[in-house]
Amino acid sequence: MKQHHCLVLKVGSSSLVSPEGEVQENFIRRISQELHALRQSGWDVIIVSSGAIAMGRILYNKPTRKSLSQKQALSAIGQRYIVNLWQNAFDAFGILTSQILLTRDDFKSRKRMLNFRNVLTELLSMGSIPIINENDALSSDEIRVGDNDTLGALVAVAAGATHYVIMSDIEGLYDKDPSRYSDGRIIPEVDSITDEIRQMAGGSGSAVGTGGMITKLSSAEIVTRAGITMYIVSHSLQHLAQRLEDQAGMGTRFKARKNISRHRHWIGFQSSPTGTLVIDDGAVKALQGHKSLLAVGIVEVSGLFKPGDTVEIRTQEGRLIAKGLSNLPSSQINLIKGKQNAQHRNILQQEVHSSVVHANNMIILEETKP
Image (cartoon, rainbow, N blue to C red):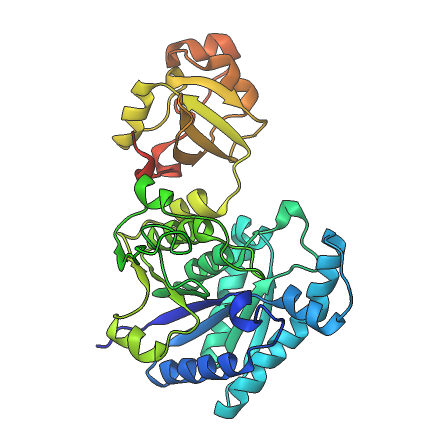
């Protein structure tokens, strides 16, 4: 039986608005035709569309400040127009679009994320193409996802997508900055995100977008650990539908890795850490051997957190090796850190969990192993 495919396509601001401030309607019509072709082949399609603030500036057409409140206002002006552009393009194929605006809280809360997943499933079953963006008009720093590369990755995981494509003015991941080195070459395939790969990433390459290659690599870590294949491609790429069907000729491909449980993925990439545990070398080896984290291996505690909160687990050199759910509050861990389990009762005057973070509630970030 033919495998069912689901694509999340993230379209950057630079794809929708030219550097001269012109709306790229021809691009939107071309991509809509490609997505229509994919749907006819049995694919589900979801769009994560940037451009609300850039579009708001065009519509407002007056000098603007750089204040957060004005950016939020411009987003409110431009968001409706962005969705209308997509709907007008899909009208030619009789496709109904829908709109969902999200914040980080929609992914931090498992209940809200489940609700989002259910709505997505229903919209796709109704034949609609969801147009998704961050709720820039109301998001504060505390609840912002921050960039649409990451938002698209989180949407892809929630949707159970098979493919995630980031489309922007960047053709792929280069081995060196092509704007500075004429011999820079695109890396066609990446197996895993190593330190060497991260060092190839630079800053934002667009005048109207906010995401650079670093955020794209972070997005690749999120989706590939969920068993999703990711591509970085240029918005000038032709024949997207056929290339996706052939799995060839598309910028840089990040290979899907062995899928981890949704529980561990949520801990590692969707929940927000509220504290940090620094551990010794013995504890590092234990964690890499899929063992739980015990208090005896902890050398430092930072942050205020309670049982069930997510914590980062770092080496003494500061490298992030894992994330997990704490069984104990930070106040108790501070009292028993470095101590054997047999001493805990006398110190705390009560029985507590034998592990600070259980192996079942932990994800090891393999690329950062020592």
